[in-house]
Amino acid sequence: MLRLYDTATRQVRELALREPGKVSIYLCGPTVYGPPHLGHGRATLEYDVLVRYLRWSGLDVTFVSNVTDIDDKIINRAVNEGRDWHDIAHKCEDVWFRAMEGIGNARPDDVPHATQYVEQMVEMIGQLVELGRAYATDDGVYLSVETVEDYGLLAHQSLDEMLAGGGERDIYGAELKRHPADFVLWKLAKPGEPSWDSPWGPGRPGWHSECVVMSLDILGEGFDLHAGGQDLRFPHHENERAQAVALGRRFANHWMHHGMVVDATGEKMSKSLGNFDNLLDILEKYDGRAYRMVLLQSHYRSPVQVGETTLTNAAKALAGLDAFAARTSSVAGATPDAAVLDAFRAAMDDDLDTPKAMALLFDTVRQANKLLDADDPDRAAPLVAAVREISVAVGLELGGAADVPDDALRRAAELDAARAAKDYALADSIRAELTGAGWIVETTPTGTTLRR
RNA sequence: GGCGGCGUGGCCGAGUGGUUCAGGCAAGGGCCUGCAAAGCCCUGUACCCGGGUUCGAUUCCCGGCGCCGCCUCCA
Image 1 (cartoon, rainbow, N blue to C red):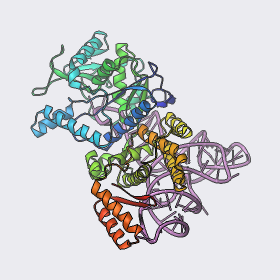
Image 2: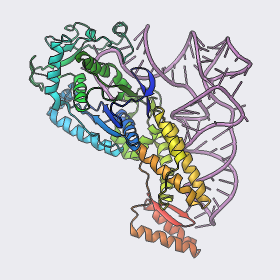
Image 3: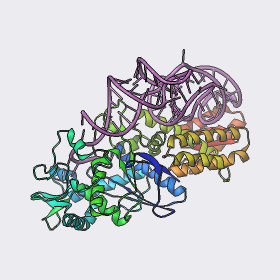
């Protein structure tokens, strides 16, 4: 079974399942106020790999990831551009899922929206107030963090330590709060702002409430895994957890956090990556699988550079795998090599050691190529099958020889005929023509194959 | 200031107390090929600095230096 680093306990430990054979996962999704950036790509790809691997392992996975469709950032943009906030949220969500498709991410099983859960959030906030864990002020309702006994579990810092330093950022509602770390559950609306009714007056939910309500509603108490970026560890996840604890409800059993995307000079990505900042831009320039490969070749908790160099390298590595897939498209299905799959599982189960898994994949490809070079397809077949399995398990679709139009196939046959007749001038001209048409032409002893 | 993490060969990026050792990309040489492409083989004195522990440290400990994330709403 999978062993995963758990932020709460700071150790790699087995992902214990609430129900045998079933895995419940909640991932904090996007706030839809702008185009998805590179960080979002990683935030979704890492878990797409996880979910696919778990499913491949035979587990029944329920994967939930929300969309925050009401938030200050959406409202601010609406005001600045004189648009309806719904319009921004809807369009951004469309763009989001188009980008997700582009990088090969499967849609989560459930995509709850914050606006669908406002009533339940109001209800939960009411319970927290009743319990004396939350209180109303002139501008909203706040959770009293001092009433949460183990507040700071994920931050690994006590309240005092958190307050010891810190930035000079504005603290929302600072003057009215009982404790500086108290966080807002309900924001009372200012004139013109979108709002919902509540016992404390019209307003909107604070950011940290939706994920508690939605995860508990859909996945239930004590669900298996809660995931997100390391930047969400605190305050977002800490505060989600605080609400559940304050309610006396069991929350996530295991916490997974992935590392950030950094740029080539090590500076903060948001400023320095320029035109690659937008996820859609990379999809225009690179194979959608390249980003996945970059991430697979590094560990999910490490910072990763995503840029021209790393994406280009990954695309070239993929080209090799595609060539292999094309070369082996006619190799009949066989029982995958057990030793290879065992090694693959061992790597993945060790805190998702995808770099090791990829090394194994490339090694297996090399072994299979060697056997094919030696004209021994029978012994290559189990290795080929293993490569196919691993590709599926990590979500890499390898390009085969399929979808070559008839006229191109005819030209390829003519190329072979010309070579057989030693009419190399003609052969070269046909090859040039096909290459010019965007085909990768591979002339082998058994004939010419084409792929894109 | 606090908490967490990182510093590996031309580039990216794993990993480990010790003879050969990730892997990808790039480079050089070779095999194969009509020529290519693809593939295969070979090559490159890597582990931020200074101490310490040890028969032996890139790997453990201590101290530096540099970088990154978080410390109230950023994946």
